Image 1 (cartoon, rainbow, N blue to C red):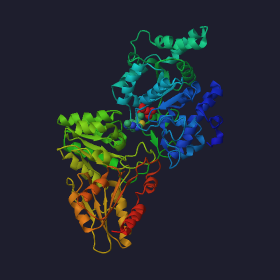
Image 2: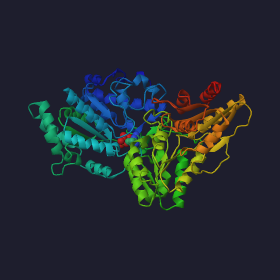
Image 3: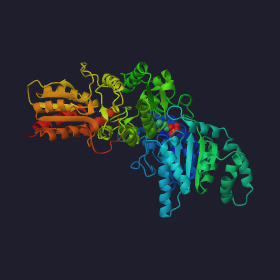
Image 4: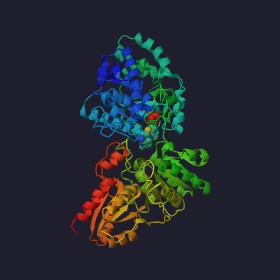
Length: 633
Ligand SMILES: Cc1ncc(C[n+]2csc(CCOP(=O)(O)OP(=O)(O)O)c2C)c(N)n1
């Protein structure tokens, strides 16, 4: 549908524009918002099923509240496309997740009503409480809402925040968007508890009854508020014990049908009047309104462009991915060793562990969005004599940094970390790039840190890690597949030993490329041009970021006066700086250039665009190498 075909949505620039609409027009608007998500995301790709589930919630909140100054903090932000559409971004929606286009998440730089950016889950309640307390400190009176999903609310941070909310008792509304799904089906005891709450009488029925009672009251505003506070919530289930949220000092309202717009409008208009912390439990359907997405919300969580009419998303087979190779090798390791177990933190599909979960269900653990727990759980398993494979994306392991250091490394426990999505991930942008793991892991004593040059090497490194029991090990690998142009000749993985892919030939000015992981491919490509242009190029595949192969590096340094290091990790604390320290220590007098990610947050865009933008592709390497050899010695 062309943008002109929407009647109301193009007239909405700010949420306050919703105030001039009748409830019937708001219904129509919700239909248009859902249609816009279908129309736009089927063309751009992006997060899909979560957004279809938040349409009515968003329309109702934005109609009932006064935004701005009222504030809504969205957890993670992958379900906030309705928010984007109701804040004037329909004309830019075709640029969703494209380079220089609008982000797939909330970003403060993008819009003033993206009041708090995110991408990692579990931050909304903390941030919203911060806004609420800032309001109290400053003496203003706006309302603050946090919207969190049922998987995000189970994360440790959310519970730390709820604990604090219950203590502070300030005015804050937490909306639980409960669709029973994480990316995969949700897990954990809290999920079971939420199911119990869902089985209570739904607010819809009670509200109608309460409404009749409230309507008889003389002062509508205060009485309705009072009615909700002391009527509906207790009216709902007078015989039942309080929910855990009530026990923690929050007013629990729900369960409420998160797609019943008239009811949601009623609820939010009333909740807005309530003081203190309020917890609204909305039941939604992930993928709502698009049958195939309702039926398989995991498949439709994040989509590539697809045929909207045929409901078909055709993923081309493509070369084998790192994720697949890890998944398969993990199963191979489990076959060989009954003590091996695998752990994911809510990412069974993304980490490649679905096959493992089916083949070895009793040796597979999904902790939910709980990276900190996942790491210390793995440490406990290792201390208890089990061999944990802990598969967490590079960006999400940042959450478990202290656990890696304090629980795993100090005790030198043989936990194996598998960090998918290392380097630039593409369309998800700054919150998801795995830009820092080589830095944040290599300065930890006892850690062994590797990066494979291709998928075959990932398999070999995984097998190496399975057999290494003397302490913690980690391997980081990029999103996607490996560079097919690399030579097939292999040397076995040995601790701290690099692989020499190209030796000096003695013809031309010498330059050595020392690359790690995903940069070996582009370095190899660049080397072909540099050699054709008359340079004598050596190429080292470093394999280990810790311990680095000092012997090989010093040998090569002894033969040349120009070295480039290459890594898809930020410069500070990364691989190149370790090489630099080593060469400085040895008093090497040559010319050194470190190619790495820049010291700023890289935005979203495809991986090739971003790699070119930050100078990590072959043309950039060629230019840097030529500039280096032209520098005076
Ligand atoms: C710290 C962290 N770990 C993992 C993820 C990956 N992730 C993105 S969305 C999501 C599921 C969120 O589920 P829920 O909060 O219930 O929201 P829904 O998508 O169901 O609306 C996960 C695991 C993340 N964004 N942040």
